[in-house]
Each structure stands twice: as C-alpha cells, then as structure tokens.
Image (cartoon, rainbow, N blue to C red; front, side, top):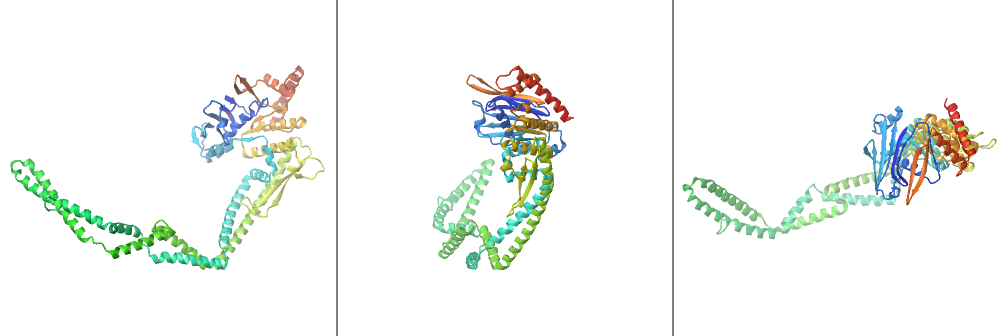
Length: 562
C-alpha cells in the first residue's frame, strides 16, 4: 500500500507530507483548495506529461515522492520481471521536475518515465474525473474485457497478432507483384540495362583506389621530375652536393682521429651518413630513369576512372556498394522472369495466412465470449451494490469486416436500468452519475483481478446523491476492506466512511497562496462532515446530524467487514 507522499514546490503546494493508512483514506476540502493538484502529483509518477508551469512560482524545481510497502508476493513477482527489487518490501518512486526536463528514480536509481510508469501501474490505479466517459467508446469496452480475462485472452491475442503480421506481409508481397504486362516489361528492360552495365565494367575490389593513385602520379609527373632533380642536385656527389661535402668531411676528420680516440665514433657516424646518401641517390636515380610519362597509359587510366565514378554516382559510393546493388537488381530481375509463378505463390501464401488469421481470430473471439459472460455477472452484482435495483447488463459482440492485430471483435456494452426495458448501448440511456457508478464497479472488479493494492478515486460521486450516494459509500467501505483506497469527495455519505480523513485547505498570506493538507481527528472529522452537510454555517443541529452520520457509518463498516 501507499505509505507516504511527499510533494514540494508543485503549483500551490509549497511542501506537504502525508502518511496514509490502510482501508479508506478520504480527502475533502473546499472547491479550489488543491485536491486536483494532489491527484496530479500522483499522476506525474504514473507518467503524465510535466511542464514548467506546474513548478511553484520562484522555485527551481518540483518534487513528488511516493513510498509503497508491498506484501503481495504476486506484485513482488511482477516487479522482479521489471528488474525492480523491493528493499525490505518497500519501493520509493520519485520525480523531480525542472525547467524542460525531469529526473525519475526508483529506489534511488535513475529510471526512464516508461519504467516509472510500468512500476507504478503495478502499485496503484487512478480513476480521475471524467474517466468514466471513456466507457462510451467501443475500444475502451474491449480493453476492459481483455484486461478482465487477460490470463486466457492475452495468449490468444499474441497468436492473432503474430498471424496478422504474417497476413499483412503476404498482402504486401502480393501488392508488390500487382503490375501489368507493359509495366513488367519496362521494369525488366531497365533492370537488364543496369545489371549489364555493371557486369561489363568487370569491377574488382580496390581498383578505384589504385587508379586514383596512378592518376595522381601521372597528372603530376612533370612536377615530380622537377622536384626530384633539385633533390638529386642537393644530395648528390657533384660539386657542393651533400654526398660530396659529406665525403670531404669524412676525409678531414680521419686526419685527426689518431690524436684522440673519442673522435672515432663521430668518424664512424659520418661514414654511415655518406653511405646512406649514396644509397638514397642511387634509388632516386633509378626512380627518375623509370619515370616516363605515357600518354596512352594516362588516357586509359582517366577513362577507367570516369567509368567507375559514373557507376558510383548511379549505384553506390564504392565498388562494394555497386556490386551489392547489382546483386539486388539481379534478384529482382530473376523474380520478374518468374513473375507468373511468383504471383501464384503469393496468392497461395495470402490465402494460407488469411485462413490462419481467421482461425486464430475465431479462437480469440470464443475465449472473449466466455470471459464476457463472467464479466457480465460481476458487473451486474457490482451495480446492484451501487443502487441499480433492477439492472440488466450484457456485452454484445460484432464481427468487423476487416482484420486487425486485435482480432475481428468489436464489443458494445448494453444496459437496462428499469424493469421491462430492453438493453440499449450505454451512451443512449445512462446519465453521468450512472456511468460513473458503472466505471466504479468495473474498476473494483479489475483491481481485484490485477491485485492492485492502492486505488485512487477522484470525485467518484459526480452526479449522485441521496440513497445512491449512501450505496456508493457502502461500496467504497467494502473495497476499503480489501484494498487501500484514496478518495477525493464532496459527499458526506462517502466521507463518513473514512478510516483516515484528510482535509485540504488553501491559505492566502500577502501575495502568496499555499495548499496545506492535514489529518483530522475524530472530532474534527465530524466537523468537516458538518461542513459538507450544512455549508458555510454549521448549526448545532447540523453538527449532531454529522455526529450521527459518523456513528452509523462506523457501525455499518463493522457489519460490512465482519
């Protein structure tokens, strides 16, 4: 369950910390006090988008932290599959929001928003205002059914998804072959030209690099000759050449080495230099003798380079790419040569994939229908607990004309809330309050199925009052016996069932507005109930009424939970 909430610098909240208890945690307060901000802080942990606007004025960041205590072994197993290990059974989720970015952490380790959302969805479920409106959409209705029966439905959905992928692939393969004879012949002619052009070039790997090296040499042959001639003059054995001067130096130093043995190594070094210069000049002389500019060689080299560069411009940035392109085009050409045969095979493959997909869709639909019967029963039971006295509910299946990765099913929830009336789609007969109660029943069923410990309801009382409100409060108390529930409400009937009661208040001091949250004692809880009952002025009669309501609620909770 959720143990602790810490919110700092979020909208009107400067800093609040809340310790939640088991059972039913009720949050009440005046309209505009900041209840939606508190819920929004939790939705940030669930991955909702953040913006600079939510950071409190004059603050650098906003921070939300949720601490959970987990005892359910199945939930712990789910977290392990997400590579999250609870420390002493606890999980700490935090999100720090700064200008243009956020830092998310799970047990102190940095995580992505997606990882945070996946972990949080195992721990709590939020039913926000107006979410019940999504019940009017067929996609949501099917999603609810699939969530309810996921143990049996999910494996079948995965098979449908796989077969649908093969079916779409077969469709594309057939569509790619959908060309007329004239177009086919044009494409064959074009491919034959490309393949033949590359084949005639007879390219070899590395050929272009060798040609470019030779071309550079031939293009700059005159410059090379002039430079090497100068080098040969400077290093040669002619008068004033380096080799001549080094030879003179060797002879000179040899005249004095007899007087000092320390000069012998230097004499040896000069001798080596003279030898190196002689070797260098011999090799340079040979290179210059061989360096002859051949017009024919230059022409052929330039022509070959032009051909290769032209192929590169059309087919690839290097010879390897060109050969790969040739291979692909050759394969396309082969396919076109075998067009009629391939067309027949593609049709057969599509028919086979279609049969497989239809079979898997039928299996999925059959499994869904089995779970739909059980879901109908549980929803009817839940609705009766919520003051639908004579309710009939059903899930109608419609087979769509086309396949999807989700099968061919479309479902429609139908309901009758009065005796003698036939069931009709939700959107045609239910009010906002009725829709809210239906969603409450569904949320309760799914929470039990998913074993989510913490449920959060934001103003589930929308559009209800009187006896219905009492029934909703009793339902919330029953849910609180098996789950931790956080409920934001304006109705005293629901607030009276609180195991822990919080009040949200807005304070204005000077130019600053802040939202504060504090737990109410038993006495103050009764006073808050009186405010909900009587408005601004709390008379003694209203107070006594509130006190009686709280007493009756406590007695009723004992009966419900025993």
